[in-house]
Image (cartoon, rainbow over all chains, first blue to last red; front, side, top):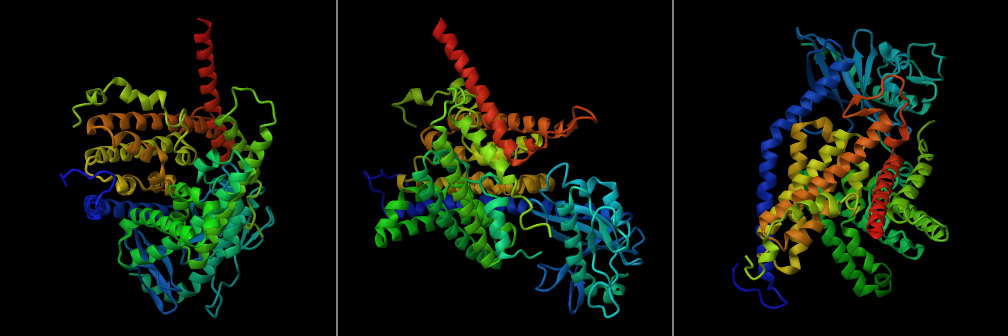
Length: 223
Length: 194
Length: 212
């Protein structure tokens, strides 16, 4: 490494040696950082999931990740398989099943709106939602988390499955502001219809897929 | 949720325009948008590089996730994109000198354009499949070209206007870009709604 | 290392202040615009982004300066990019470990620090020609200048667009936020406004000199 560099040209092997040296230093640094932060990151992610789930399922104290597939439900290990759907089972202090939480996404005004909804197994209804990510216009689109009238829709939103266990008995529908009549309808926010519809459509899509897979096996989740 | 290809294309072209809504590729946007004559080839060259980068990133991501080497993603993206652009440049120089003369001078500049790396990173973050990635990179490139051409046309017109010396230069370009960005906000909601 | 050029080695106050004021990356050189505009919707985001960039800038300048005599000219840019990407990956993991909500707020822009022209520019123009200590001092100045620039933008946008600063409400209940300021166009407008202010100040001081 110390020999004088010839004028204008550098031999190829010197370039390769230098690049290799730099690359290995960098590799060691990256792997070191990855290894040392791995636990903290996993912990942070768990806390974040728990916090989000506890918000939509009040009273929950413990969260487990599951995946629902046409062949049944099992605890999630690794990636979600093709055709499967991830959901969270929440338990209270005593270990009893408190409810189910799952993610829903719909195309909103600016970008995709992602929400987490909490499902109560007794009433077969959605009892709370929380926003995971969105880029809607502040002051208009973000009413979906602040508007109490809109959130009232999600105190008992009906998502019962039909008797054949193939789909929801009544599809979740977003209706014009002030015209909600049935328990499966969502009263849109006046002036933020697109965002309201994104939430409604996302929940419908997600529940249509998850509930028929989940409901026949719900007893397996009870400890 | 599965986005359709046209949804992705429209979204990256207009609603989530790379330059005006996501602030990617601002350096060339402000630097090369002085004349319409250079803006268009620059835009086309960038679109081309984005396409190459998107393909590379898609392949690399498959490889990296197969071996669980996610922590090497950033470093390998940037190195592979930079070297593949160099390779494309050499091939182009050899087999299509006319095209090289038109785009060649812009290619090395584009490698470190954040819009290019942005395409690669965003498509990975959003889990796009192969055709979705293609639509995303084409839409992003077209959006970049559109923003660049619009800006260049505006600035060419502006040269005829009597602007106070104080405002001239970058400050004026930025305010112009702000107005353009405001206009593009009107596209929000396209593809959403019903 | 180069004893025949002792003048270059001395670290003056200007080595540091160059980046903070005279060559401020945000307001004077208008470099590294993508993160400047994208993440400055709030003061907290702006400061975190500034500090992340500062870290990458200082550590990569240090490493580049350390190996500056070993790296052949032909592969120097490639080497710098690899070094910078390494430190960005490091920062990426550190931020994830510290706060996931911050990580989500900054999004892909942490990884996009790699292509921030300030860092490659400093590595190439300064760190590759100067001893480690001087390179670090200069990079520190640049990074602080960048952070100050981001903070100025972030604070302005947060105050106007949300009526808050660092998350604390400033104006009470009846403030109607100027929402467009936290949206993309606001980023352009606020930076344009700051640049206008600086060019106004410069023209004032030039006039003052001319009168004397």
